Image 1: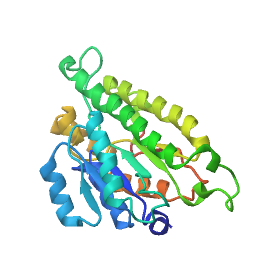
Image 2 (image 1 turned 60 degrees about the vertical axis):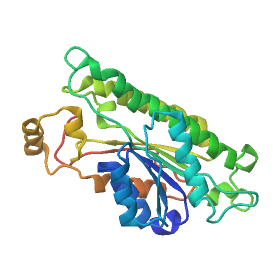
Image 3 (image 1 turned 90 degrees about the horizontal axis):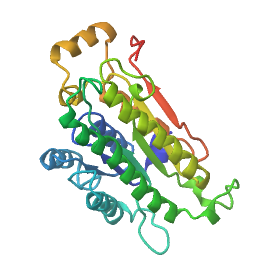
Length: 275
């Protein structure tokens, strides 16, 4: 199913230089969906583009919380890949935006490193909010209210899915005992995703929240978790999820027919009972 319904779409993935974001980008490309990659590490994005090819990958490096960088991502998607199956009158904007960039932080409001609060809030909440706003407005412009309805013979939106996928976390729903301040940012993302779904869903745009539990990636190191601590979690809960597991889930969600929306998916290692 996924290959047919993803081929020819136009994607954007933030936080795509490693881990879950890179895996999602690779998965989308494998199904025929070209993508614009965003992250701060341009050299890593360049290496991925060289491997996957210019016909499938473009780059918009930079801080994804900056409005100018967000506009560059979306403009690059439109200008580079928007000509495939373009409608009369112009290029298509991205119709599959994955908001993956984020960072963790160990500790609570009492014990976490306060000097890192602003950066985490900016990355996890402000950047996601700005991307939702910018991408949502462009998708709405491609899909006016007059085009929305239930009849597939009259309403083109049923043949042209629009997706905003937001990476949250299991701890946004089930508060983490070891990173509750980070949990608070992901609880905010859960609320933001659901509010946006209620706003855009009736207009034919799907907003999906993906909530992974433990995934082995660079995330643990950036969050400040020690190797010994994470190894203890692997011993307790492993095998852990891998980025490719999340990528397959994302591809499954966005490859559904336009009238089908799997709006919230929580994914854990089988042996992880909590959080």
